[in-house]
Length: 441
Image (cartoon, rainbow, N blue to C red; front, side, top):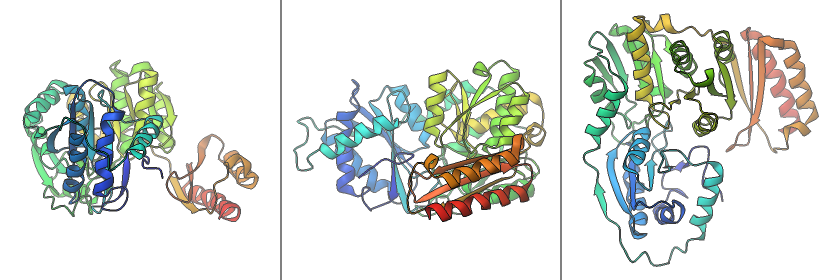
């Protein structure tokens, strides 16, 4: 059985593989997989009711293998990655299911350099996990489990070193999604003297991402209008995604945010090789808008680790997704909602412009249909599907595009069509979906 999905190990908490016995084994396997000198492992998580149970099981397995566990508590995923790199720890581990509901949970791993594992690394890790004899005795040395108490001051200094500005003239709505940013985010923005309106910062283990945060930013948008704020900022449950609202309460999604940051960095000669890494679902309006500025787009599969991987391989320093996963590698190795929001505020502060005036991307209508399939042959071999895709592409010409792919975890083929006419896009998407259903349903 495959343990790792698109972002670590994730499923309903207290169901296999996220049951205590298996999680202890996963913890024990850490020593055999991460081959660096340090004996320390940084372990944090979000606010789900099951996070304590899973963290305890991981800690037991890790310490049984003779490694020491450093526990900073509830922290955003990117901060765990940063701490791992800063401390030179053997690895970093986050117990979180990110934007999923409270009843799910997951385990994500970061290397000593603060990067997520590649697919090849995950396969090797799985082999070590399954090869472990669960009855085998532990290491002669039992590792310690200690709270990491002094991280906050150091991290706030890192943030202040990254962004030197004052935000006393800004009224900001912060939606913490009752998740991992609930304590840290207000402290960060308070250091810049911003006037804050706080939403969804009272987690109870069951309300993470519930009708709030980056996955449901409507309350944040309304609060911006109600409080006449300059900007709204909504994080997801583990703090690696962000959605914004401008001063009118209009949503500014990940594609729009990337456009704003890319333009600013390019104008200030900060954008490496004048390129940005995006994924295959990034809006065509963003790609064309960047092209007009002389900025190229590198397209990769869905998943922030593919963004990070392409950035490292090509020496680029900006990448992201429509979902609000945005990586600014001049500062950190992974997506960080707090950092991304601060970067946009830096641009607003520097340009002395409102967010609505900075948002220059005209997004194309986009339709995504998930078609249930009973089989998954290579798409090139399904002639009728490829024929209808080519037919639609020729009708769209340069004013749109088609992208189809199988889901990695569900019996589904995703059909995405973009173009400059919403009605046409819907018609094209339905035309392709109908043929897919006939051939593969």
